[in-house]
Amino acid sequence: MTKLPTARLREQSNQEKLEERELWYKLVVKIIRWKDQALCLGITRATDKITTEEWNTYHQGIVKINTTKTQEIASVAKQSSTVGDCFWASGPSQ
Image (cartoon, rainbow, N blue to C red):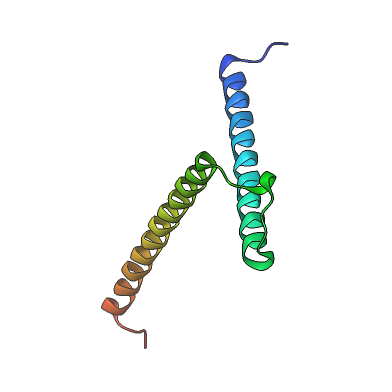
């Protein structure tokens, strides 16, 4: 039985996202190891050095994550203040 084109596209998209996340995690681990070795041990091996491209990818990813989290926090805070305003506007129950 053949898969529907949309199912194949979805599966392919999911696989691409999985591979992208895996590359991101590997880069983050490499950055952490690089920072730890440079700070704690004062040494860096040539294989652990970060290229300009890797650093830019890491930086863009971190900025994207921080922006997304800030927007989520602001949204939750706005919803919370709206709920609180409604509660206090009606007054405490007797």
